[in-house]
Amino acid sequence: ALRDVPHQETVWGASLVHELAQRVSAALQHHILDTVDAVRRLDDGAFRLKLSQGGEVESRSVVVCTGVRAQRLFVEGEMDYWGKGLSYSAISHAPFFSGRKVAVIGGGERAIAALQILIPLAAHIDYIEARPQPVADREKAEAILGHPRIDVFRGWEVQQIVGDDYVTGIDIVGVNGEVRRLPVEGVFVQFGLLPNNSAVRDLVTLDAFGHIVVDENCATSMPGIFAAGDVTNICAEQVPVSIGEGAKAGLSAWRYVAANKL
Image (cartoon, rainbow, N blue to C red; front, side, top):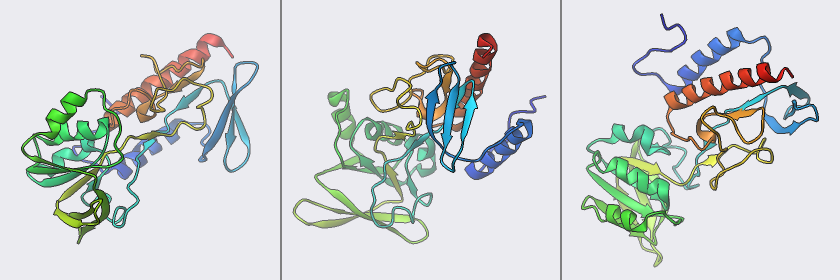
């Protein structure tokens, strides 16, 4: 019997987090609900964690599962329609917009990847190139942008997200001041993700995007610090992947402590 795997066809994120938290709390001797502001390595190889509400905790190993945060547009209507037609992850939510007209807002690799995911699904895509960033394969990117079901808007900025109960459109403004409303049922804001690495960024190796670099055992460049989920360079934006990597990181941390007898 698999007693440690939630088995539900559809589950809300908050419900899944609550269920997992209950299972973890039942197995813990100590549970501190706080934010770690900084981690410092001590001379004996252990770590001291500074907590935001005051106080410190010492540990023999640290597992970082702090995730990422999306870069927002900061325009009117954005937060009103988050989860109501507006998404920050095409890889997670694109299937919900099959056969619909959508907009993708971005300007780098993540936006191009979103277009690739949506082309087989969406009826039409409006691509607003905002905050342009270099892409590894410009020729491939231009080929994707040339797809007949994609309209490209360069030099336009998003002014607001509009709708009723759900998204119905976006207003964009051109360099000449012209305002246009694009009727869409979905909006994907696809700027680069921002890893929550501040507590350990001075202790571990980061990649060019700020993700914590880990090996196949979720070990970082600092002995005793492990990491899992989207905060790492194994960023998949998928809950099952993060759960699996988290379990692996926990086992690796246990093995580290047992082997080093700190």
